[in-house]
Amino acid sequence: MCPTCLNAKALFFFTNDTRLTSISNIKFLTLDKLKKNGVILTMATQLRLYTINKGKLDEFAKVWRENVYPLRLKFGFKIQGAWTIPERNEFIWMLSYDGPDGWETQDKAYYASPERAALNPDPAQYIAKIEHWFVNSIS
Image (cartoon, rainbow, N blue to C red):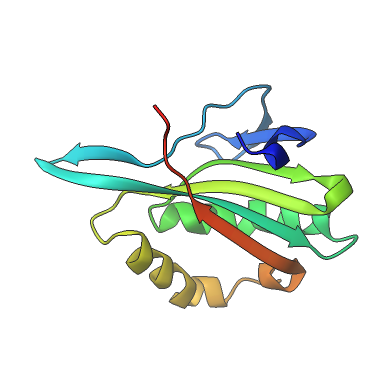
């Protein structure tokens, strides 16, 4: 696990009914090969780290939970978890996609969708810096 993740004070995951639930340990999902209808698909998993504008972390987390999270699910993404590091104004989350269109195509479709354009408030207004990486399993 990355050093930043180890410093996270609050660890959360989402259940199917979209309630935010606290847990003490989480198993991270990473790039895995899945077989569907005889076709091997790769599950791409991305770790995202957002630095949020000072004083806006709680507001961003609420907007993300109520808007971004359900919309990403609607577009076929899986979200393994979301965390905050309040003393650093950071929001961390992991999401995966294993559909037939591939990560890049589906991510572009998400951002180009009327639903994403209609999000109000726009979650991007809270973000000062975005970092993201695809992660690979070591097992």
